[in-house]
Length: 310
Image 1 (cartoon, rainbow, N blue to C red):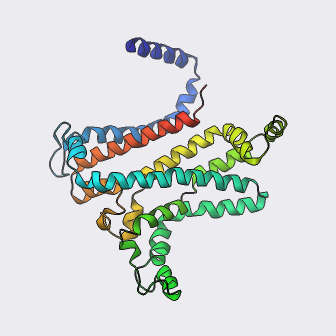
Image 2: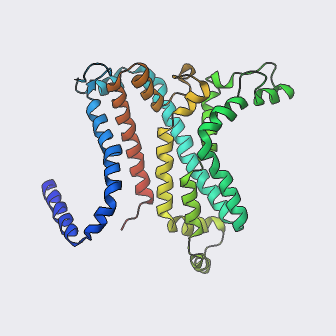
Image 3: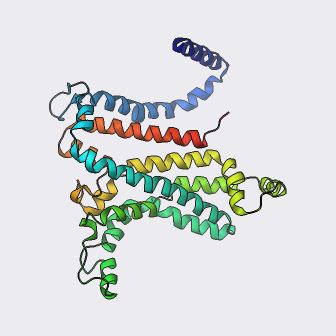
């Protein structure tokens, strides 16, 4: 049955290829080559490397599924800290940032053009400068001495008696990571949603009110979201990729990898720890494949929710 489906697929694709304008393939060639070289080939190499032990000095040595077995049974840090941190961070930053992007985009769409443009630029800019501001503004703001802005404010208000090392404290680091990431999460997904909302046909709203829609919430649920499913899908995928692939933030804020007591360590930090600190590239590749699997799984869920059925 499966072989018949595969044969039917190739027959259909061959028929389509004969009907296509061959010049289109020529224009697509540069992107295709770049995609193969920088996306497909590295993924294939990572998968192959995940079945080996490799210290970047000697040649890779095949070890079968040992890396994956170690990941699931013996990596105490991964099971106790990394996985739970990554899931919690992804839930808060992924859906949280996604909903926040849509709400802010919808609010801006209700404003006059000039004010909307200014506010959109203000909200979008942090996503471009997040790395710089993290190392300059946020580290100064949360500095662990009295010169830190937050400590200074709390001391002046009499809420604390001595400075708190926020970025070295397992109690506060994770919360700060989530807040800073959400602050800089209004990127291209946010702009896509804003464009989608602005391009919804206004006649649909008029027809909806004639058919019984009575408030703005019903308008959003029944008209706005269904009319911008491609933008919602794009925003969802971007939110998922950002949530799972963000890892530098905890290390940059705390200044160490792993972070204090693994409080802010995510799977990306774990990959860097094994790959570039312990020089176990085989196990780091296995972690990368696991991360790729998580991103793919949740991206498929997003496609089921917002993908076009036809």
